[in-house]
Amino acid sequence: MSGSRSFFVSDVEVVARGLPEAIAEGLSACFGSCRRAPLPARTRVVFEVERRGDGFRVMRDGEFVAGAPGESTLLPALERALYDAFPAWHPPPRAILHAAGVSLGERVLVFAGSSGAGKTAFARAFLELGAGYLGDETIFTDGERLWGFPRALQFDVLPEGAPPPPWLGEVDLRSYRFESDAGISVRPLLPPPEEAIRPGPHPASSARVILLERGERDTVEPASAIDALRVLTTEAFGRVETDLGPLLRAPLRVRWNDPRAAAERLLRHLP
Image (cartoon, rainbow, N blue to C red):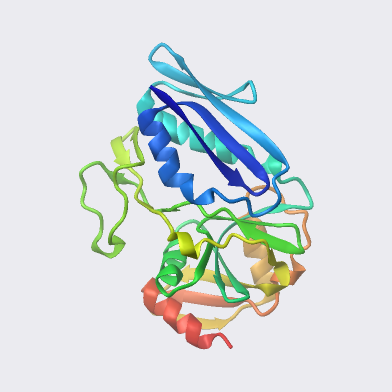
């Protein structure tokens, strides 16, 4: 039995066909919150999954882009093929920032930092505080506007059957199962509330960059525009050829130990 799913990345409608039922459900869990295009749709891209013996081939508009030796490895292969296409869909002057984003009224907070710095944790903390949601990993900008990819929040992989850490709370531990070198693993997912999804576009001038770092206690302090530019460009997906100046007004640095407490501290610090 096979199925299809569709969702939007910026102004690209992505259609995935020929999916085994479990993979179709996994894609829905990951990207079902991306049903609305943040920009007027301009093109449609089709990913076709073809079974070859015990394995699968992933084709994008008729071109081979990924393989999977079995169904247990197909979902990560599809996801990687999707992200690998992002640069072609976002040529300059667009840039793909490795950042999370939330909205507070007309203001956007862009959380940037190295892998493990807490981008997803802060996106979740602000969702719990009633913020709008742009995305937990990917923010797009053309220098004048920015917008998000509001997939389900994804947390660190767990071995199958391992209890999640208590702080993780209620998450989906069923939809994203896959086989890795360590055995069967689970990617915890947290779909954003429908009413919180606000990918944009938003004026780039409405954004404030928050540089995240882990620390022994929660602190908020000003950061330099140079530091913000360095982090945004270093952690971007690909080369940045976009004027990020509108995003660099009054950045802040947050060192945190508890993301919810640090988020509340940051809220008090904002004018």
